[in-house]
Length: 295
Ligand SMILES: [Fe+2]
Image (tube, rainbow, N blue to C red):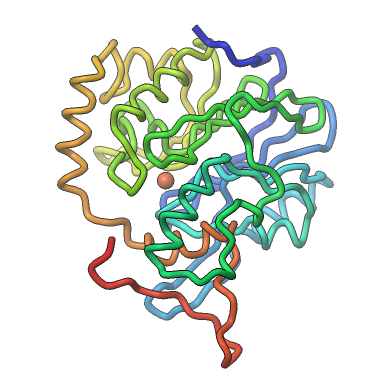
């Protein structure tokens, strides 16, 4: 049973933005009754080989919001992404809005503060964000009632944000033929992920689910939207009532075969800072570190 105060009678307009470089889907979520909107999981572009960042993807979102005369109330990060860099601070500077993430960002900051040997100037208290969501916290986007559900397992800070009848699941679930995300990053846990997926599947059947990633398995076109009902019946990892033991065994075996995501090293250093680059050193230049034999 779902115990979260969701209201499926409000149906926000959801505009996806697909980033082919990282297979990430960002969203602008608009209140049907006003010009208020939220931006979910934006992407900052990086040419890692060249050490060059740019903002073509974020500029598309900014142009869309400006053309439609929308007001950004929230910039939501479903979690600390390990495969792309967030553009939230860049968008916030241009369009405003409050930047929010799950409370357990502090655990992620502590873990990766150590991995990257950050000094004391790197705060591990989540203070880089405007709001740290606890499980069940509610907020609004215009007239859209929203609730944050803590759905850890992929990472400790993962949240699913339900806005009206639309749930943004981050990496808790993939499309039915994509299954689920890996649970082997530091702080990840396959058992916990299974429990979190059950929380999402306990939402009403007709809840629209929006993915953070899609890789077009078996050559199909990219898709990002499904429903709780579809995931329950046909998700290849958890559908049809797959047991926790079975899921954990499968997930653990699969994760042991996976390489690290291509952009994990720059992504974590930037995303644990809420999307800001590391501060400049005494030369005035900014650098990203590559820890050797650590990850
Ligand atoms: Fe992720």
